[in-house]
Length: 443
Image (cartoon, rainbow, N blue to C red; front, side, top):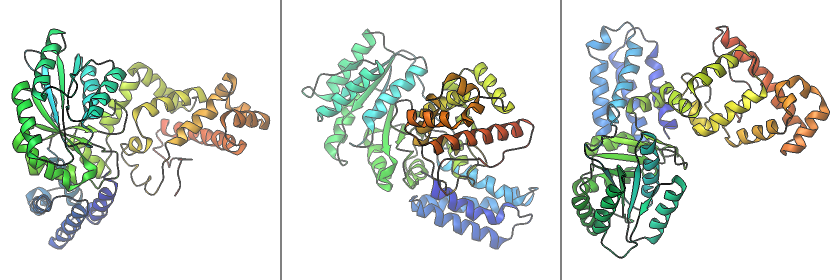
C-alpha cells in the first residue's frame, strides 16, 4: 500500500542521507519533497502541514547540529514523525476484570466489518480467550449468514435471532447467553449502511448503551481514501469508538488513511487486517509501519509470523542447515510451505531490511510458489534428497509431465536451487547478502 509513498520519501531523503553538514536550503528542499509525497498519498492537508512543520523544526534544531551524521539524523526524525503520525506505539487489547470482555464493531457496509469480527475472534483465541459472536445486523440477512459461515469455519458459536428483534435486545440476550455458556470474549457485529445516516447512529448508540462494551472498534476500509477519514469523524460523536481496525492494508490504496485518521480523530489504530485469510490480522505497530514505508524493513513482524508457523528449536535447526548450503529439495519444500502460510511473498520480502531497492520494479508472482511446489512434489524422495539425479533429462521430462511444467522449467529450478545453495554457503561464511538469484518476476 505504501510503495509509491515510500519511494517518494526515500527519493527526497537520498539528498541528505550522506550529508555531513545540512544547510537551510537542503532542509527546505527535503521537507518540500516530503510535503508533496504526503499530499500525493492522499494524506489530510492539515496533517501534512503539521508533519512537515515538525520535521523542519527538528531538522534545523540542536538534535541535528550535534549529531555525528546530520543526514542520517534527518532520516531518523522522519521515521519517528511517521510513527507519531500513526499513533506512536501499539495499543493492545485490554480485558474486563470480570468476564466476558465485550467488543463492539461499527462501520459502514463494505468496509469488512463482518470479516473483521471473525478475524478478531480467531485473534482472541490465540491469546487464550474463548470467543463468541453476536449478530446484530437486522437489516441484511446476508450479513448474518456470512457471520454464521465464519463461525462454522472457526468453530466459534454465533448468536442470532434473525432480523426481527431490535439490535440492542439481540446484543443484550447474546451477551447473557455467552456469559452463561462460559465464553469470556464477546464480539458484537452491528449493522452498517452504505452512507452515514442518523438512523444508523442512533441504533449504534442504543446497542452501545445496552451492551456496555469494554471496547468499541471502528472498521475502516483504506481503499476508500479520505472518505474513510470523514466516516471516522462522523462515527466519533455517536459510537464513541476507542480504536480503529484498518482493512485491505495489502491493497493498492495510497495510504493516506493510515497517516491521517489518528491525528483527525485522536483515536489509535489498534488492528491491521491484511488479506482474505482469517489469520491475517494483527495489532497495528506504528513504528514498524514507519520502518516499512522508509524501506528499513520490519524484522520483528517477520520473526513473529515465522514463530507462528514453526517451533523455535526446529527453526534454529533448519536455519543452520540452510546457512550450511547442505539443504535439500525436501528442506526447500518445507520452508516454502511455511512461507505460504505467513502471507504474500511480496509483503514478506518487503520486511527484510535492504531488500526494498533490490525488489524495485520486480513483479513478484505468488503463484510461482505453487508452480515450484508442484515440480518438487513430482520428484521422487531420492531426487529431492539428491538433486544431482535431476541432471538426467528423462527425469526432468517425467517431473515436467507430472507438474504441468516444461522440461526447461524443471532445469531452471534445479539451476536456481544450486545457486541458492552457493548463496547460503557464502552468507553462512559471513559473505553478506548477495543479489537474489532467480527471483520470480520481471524487471
